[in-house]
Image: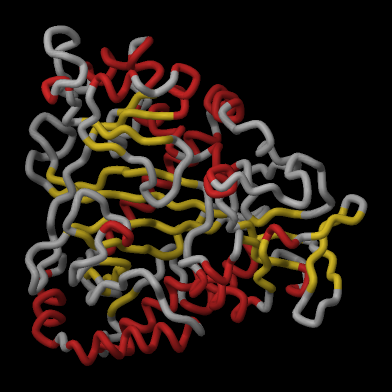
Length: 437
């Protein structure tokens, strides 16, 4: 969005440079990147990134300081996934923001480009891969050293030291594992490879762990059984549930192991938090109006949304299946899903009521945001979703560390939703260092 950098990059861009970018990524990650990588990074003023970073941290501390919220969120953890030994805070946090035009009557001047929260999640992201992507953009396109990418006052060395402290802690790397379901066939394998190589830890299938007494073990490349002292958990609970995967150990048992990213936090700070963060009087100004589906159909949720200025169809008149009953300003979202799975646009009254009564507390209705196309490309203006990646080591502080960007021109911003286009996909943000923004 910094016009000078944008114009220069577009003028200098070549397909040869893009091919070099992809080759660098494959070489640095030790495997092909199977999702679409954008031809371009974005160039943003640092104050906008810092504003998002502060907002995500403020929201997190607001949630952690609300016992009523934490009690309600803990009750929402599905049976069988309430893991013992919950940590005092999450080790990892991501906050996704849209860039939208501020409407009239909001807290900022009408028409101003402002960030708004899409969702917040206490779960790891591609911390290793994203650093590699930034360095590959630099190398492939000759980006100047006057452009920075790390947040929180970090540089490459201190970023990896903080990541090591958060993942490995005080343990020997041999006794720390990155766990996922079938990791060698996950799209995030490039990140697993980079992380394992830099930190010296092993990547293992969570279904292969072996329990002996109160301890968990894995077999190293030589087949030797090694005790696990700390688990960097990348196995998404949503996938475990959807695939009905039975683990060889009971998650709810109090194992003699530490979690880098305790599984409970996947549920405790998630889309479940958005109605709480948006609710007056303490609602955060960056959070769009949202209510639980159960409250919308059976309680005061409709009135809350209307009070927040959301335009809703009339409750009576048209058939429930009629387009006239579609909530065009709302998205229906399952609370505990990943990568945009299950999101429904323009849900009708009939579709809302078709959700079984016992499942309605597991969905929310969120005011739809219209991403502002801000990135000039040879294929037209492109939208950006910015994710702030935070690290929070044990006995440390919550630190914004790096950003991740998704570029797209469709309804959804995930890389899986922008496959057959150019100048879209996974990207990174750079900002001028030491200059007036």
